[in-house]
Image 1 (tube, rainbow, N blue to C red):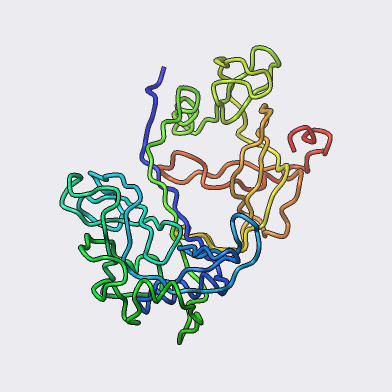
Image 2: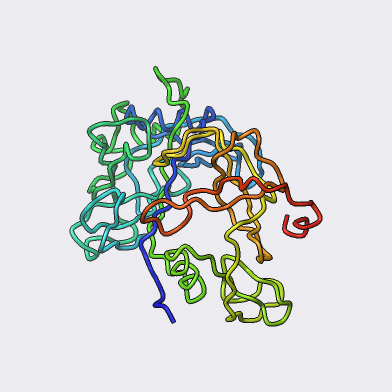
Length: 328
């Protein structure tokens, strides 16, 4: 029985989105050290602003400036900040209701320790030295001794909390932010379990091993340790392939980060001979526009690799649709 494997795994991608007029004004305002909210028809001021009233679903566009000072409504201490957090030293996550707002904003509070944080404490924005039009333009919040409307808590616009609540804002700035790229990343340790550990170990010997269900007798590759149809545990190992049949495929036209493959290329579901579940892999050795359902393929290994680099055509006649239609 092979050892159960584990390895660090990172899933990372940039999420690119365009901004509507409300979010554009909010982020551009942060760049200019102005905090904007949006006012609903019943007079509530929402910060951060949204484009639709969460109660009535009505579209709202009435922008209003609020003060960079506020009150902590609740908090939690972060004793060990992870990568990408607003501060590298221990800090408090807080919900802060800015003066002039009726909702709370989530951000970080720079405090010497949890004993220095309390619900109801006064805080103010600490602006980032370099601002680009993002929520990180607020570097964090810091304790503040003043009350709402005092000049010590104003932004560059010079308005106080009371004045902010009374007046609106055009939302017009020079060179407005119209889109953002938000990186998403998940770091975790992946353990494939008993069945997939055996599968990976077999791949290192250039063999493909699945497991057979004792009830329906189907062979699943990669194995999961249980039959997805019958729900019973699987233990009987069955070697399949190495050849197989393309069941379905897609043509990839967007180049992925850190993947040294020129587009367009083809990813396909391949039913290996003897398997009752198709796995996915890249198809090579053939022009992308000649890949087709029923194409017979075989794995291509590179030196030292633990899994096939891609699959290529074998030159055999295409498989009949009836032989793989149940695996689509």
